[in-house]
Image (cartoon, rainbow, N blue to C red; front, side):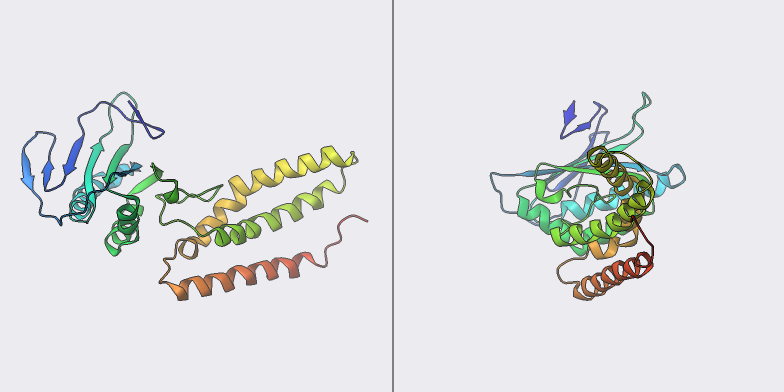
Length: 248
């Protein structure tokens, strides 16, 4: 069965629904939770985790505690956990539903979610996130594992410049010795520049600026200090590259 771009197996999932936890054996145990207003536009969030083999027991404990926390949050509808199977599926898939985009956003902005996110980062090798609401997906090369709140466009722009500027400068430095017409040289430059940002410079900037990129609106200090650091980094690049002759 394919769900929001993720291949989901038919393995027996663990389901958490309003007011109860149903285990694989089917025996329910009560989970108290707040009543959430029902809307006609529920939103689904799918998260794929590949836990570290050495942290598998801790990851399973995290699954249990995160399910309890989600089930108590206003607007929660259900959660399914599809476990790995022996036929080659080596990841856990979490399918979480909230009654509206607003409820989902409030959960992803909550202190409970941020605490859970910090914990799981140390337990997994990789993660992907998919959603029926594109508001919670991040464009271009900027995607966290797992993704946090939506990254403002101006931060994506500024961080992309930090990754792109040194990449393009170094590529231009190398291509000045290429004796070819302008059009193919420009195409080659673009191909190399995008590849460098996608696989080299981009991931480096993403890791270095992660806390700044994902800062919540109330984390003004992080946003201000991070912005200053990014601007100073660009000025440092400019000071380094300024005396280097290119062309001519």
